Picture 1: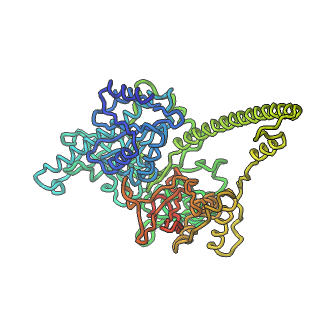
Picture 2: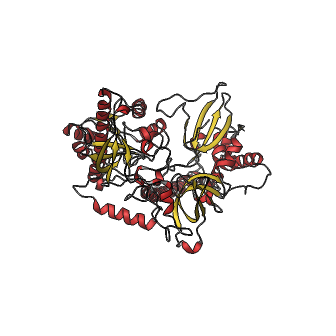
Picture 3: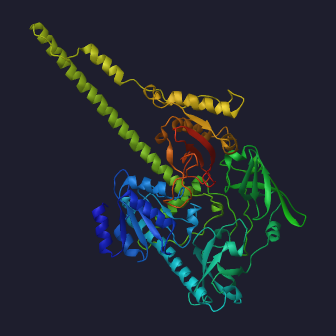
Length: 608
């Protein structure tokens, strides 16, 4: 669907669609999304960068979305990059996709995985079905926003403070989640609106759980709510002691990783609120904060009046070949009759089956309920396995297309050289005839020997270094080792003709080496990539890195770049991407052009 068709579809459906055409408009849009004036959600749709088309069926979308939903279309691929630079980390939308931005709940600005908001793999053959799915989701968010506005208005109109009104009993059904920690309960006992809000920060303060760990859609729920319509008590919630009593020693259970202690130790929760230490060789390389891992419960007891759960690694004979969930028992439930509070991630085969089932379930009347969330979303957790697998498939397809394009280009180059050879042969024949006739040769007519040299020069290939140039033990200190690796990467990667204008000019900040030692394992791919990225930056070629951008004073879109008192400007670049625990490299570029590397950290940590 091209721009003209999009505008015509929006007009025909009488729905407001904003067409974003300039970088300034993109920055204004990012600022409005991060600092909304109202509570109505927004939908941002982008064009496919290869085809410059919007695959989503805008006409179908406009017919179905509520009038107060804001729809924005980024009309070129370059605007997508500008949008990404103007938004908080990992909250943008890549080419050919769509993303919903709620205004009543800004959890997504801090946790990019809060709620199913991103819709990818939109193709011409599924454009209408995707439009219906997206419309259903955004309409639900719009309805939630209207309910919150109404609840706020009722609380404001109350003659006495809400906390002074006696809580009232209710009975209803859980209708879905609006964020990782907030959901809605439909109840006839709710005043006027028929909708209550359940917020885990109120209901279970300090408990590291998500809304999907307590409720599933259509669960019957009872309890009490206050005058603002917020649930303050839920019947059937279980204590830590009750949940711990469900555990059987020497059995295997899922546990959520909450802290990486060192290379062989992590903190985990088998029961929410009870911290256990798992000691397992190499655990830091196979798990990160928020992952769900299997553990063997060795004992359950009490110490100083608190529940104590001792865990250890799972014996090999318990796990299957894939190392996933064979022999893993269900985790305890937080609520009587509720879901298990944590579960192992699906195996690749399970994900494929689920995706296949989902693909056959979409029809003309397809609807999508609000997702319940999952425990893996805790603290910015990112178990989006099916979505990530789909993205891998897309990238594989793109790689295949690039390889095909490369083969075509190679054929064109070969044809060009063959044509060049033919013309050179013809030139030699004409040259011989002119010489035989005793006529002088025109200037610039080269012989066959010259063309051979030219072709040889054109076909010289550059060596690409795919292995780590140093093994990491050439020096006793990380300082000397890292500086040497940066130098070697610069020698290998920067062309000889560019080295004069792109010399290394950098220093390491006081916290840089400590941050590398803390966040990057010697055996990780990120450790091999780090000196290469540093080399590109230190020689003045940051465009060769991934998502290089200015570091702003705060996460809000459009905020100014952070500048030090000496005039140095702050920048950030990705060492990894599309993962909640992705590492970022932060550095200062000084007024004299030199670089000071500040630190390496995770994307949700302060940069400077």
